[in-house]
Image (tube, rainbow, N blue to C red; front, side):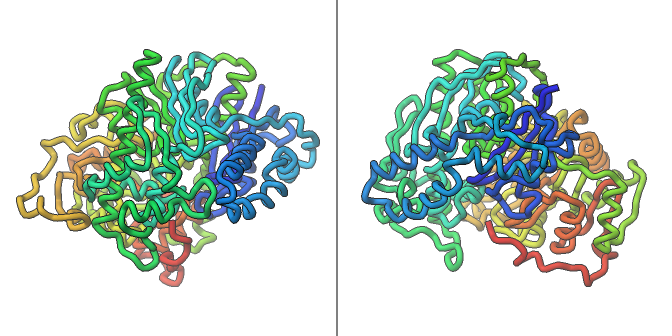
Length: 611
């Protein structure tokens, strides 16, 4: 038996995973344990979890691999500062002490941290380092259902690379092309995240959700910031940006081009300007991704595409690539960001460095992304009792029937079942569920449960066999990473007066039979559900369909704004008591909010730092 521990850390979304004989056993992000969103620190708790789940002591693990190479990253920082000198000295002065003290000598740092897990761990000879973008590419290709694929990765920046093209075949994976820092699609998108007043490395999905409320009238101005070639490759004009050497993403020249300063989220509301900016950068991003996809399809002639890196979480762009039919098949790593680098680094070591054979799973090897913690019924009841919860325990069929009944009566339900998901999406393990037929559900969930901006869209979970009847799509989308339109026959046409509305005014228009999951442009970010990946969730949606005729439920992550997705039954109960959720279904237990001790209510509006 060979075991490999993969680690990603020290930037954002720290995580750990264990693979045994090439099979993914467990993976989790550190944020779920520390309750600090996007936690970048050494993933002590995530490592403890994956070791415990795989029944291994650290001294019994064969290899440990870190997801990137710190010396190369340091080289890039130094060369960047030299190239832009003397501009950027403040940033340089802030960064260097940390690098010299910790990050540069990361093998030693890791070894000292790892010793905390096991006093019998005595040598650093089994610590290896992967390349950042190879880790991303490996996380996309090796678990995919393809024996051959071209792999496109795009993010902010790794060591030097920001965008790469790799080709994978059997157990081989080789990076063929790279775009280097400071030319980065991820950083371009993050610059506009910053400019519209959202938090970088956190609020990019808000920018994507805001885009359909606007018109892409700034597309041509954005194209002044960069030179896009026909094949999708690009160069950014650094005169407009500050991220290479400064402490902000954009500069005065950028502000002057668009006519406004960056939005201050503390005291400035989102306006039509910000919606139009969001629509514009989203359109440019999609154009670049589509052109890149077309050029690599033509160059390599391979019918399968894999995607990873933070930009691969842009499910609207992914949906456009699918819609254009550039590739016959697309597969996207559900933990596409840096967390997934831990997994990719371990898989790269196993297949590429050690030359181990790859057995392709026709469904994929991610186990539905259910790779995190799980709690048996005894543990759940013990935690609930300790928290002071009032609950009833039901046998399986009654539990499913009651939960479906709650949903059909427009109740908001916390759903905590099985293993926690790996990656940023809740997929029916740690979810908040609602009735998609309700025209009040989106606004109520956003404002009363999630405590977040009312414009944010929700995703539909749908039985796979009913997908094409409701949406303009007929491929698996188990990880909620593809967007498609609601079918025309399910839409409700807007009146002439409604069509004249602008921005957020569009939010309250009922535009389909499932308004709670229909975005203002008639699109939806879809999760397909099958019995073999999540039997309990499948049964719940089936029962909801039996009661209502609708095979769709609203699915959003079980947390409030700024909080990581819940990990333990105690986390779930705290979130339940800090929000206006009506019911919590956890294991075989059902909790009714009206029967809880009112003294246990929490003020969740100020509990977490806003994202």
